[in-house]
Length: 184
Image (cartoon, rainbow, N blue to C red; front, side):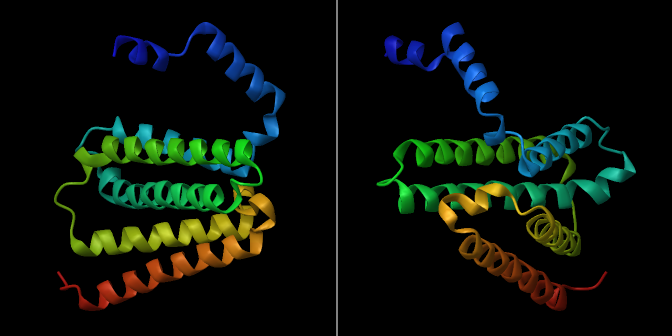
């Protein structure tokens, strides 16, 4: 068991190889989605270190949580679809995308965990609005920036249609829940 645990810890050579890979392939890592991901991380850290009584938390934490939730679930869904659909033809690239999807899912989970202390005692309507904001944010991301990983394997139109369908379902859910929510 000790040998297995030791093999999971990256060595200096592993880290140097990773750095060389990133520097040798910057377009795999620096794109509109990298900028967006960095913004989510910075926003989450900024919100999580604020005092729990900061008024901005009542407004920002729930939508940021929903944005992260969509980010994590969407990333792993796309990575899984890419792995299943293209693995036989391009195993290395699909496995890289899948690892990236897992990384994004973990990043989203960590971000949400950081926000949990600021999410207690929020009304149902707050969560409905947070969902609507997240749907709007992701729709704008797809329309304006079109994350490049949607185009993997020439499937841009298919993935955009799937993303918009998923976001449309999220928007309809917000509307339906808003209509049935008790007003306070």
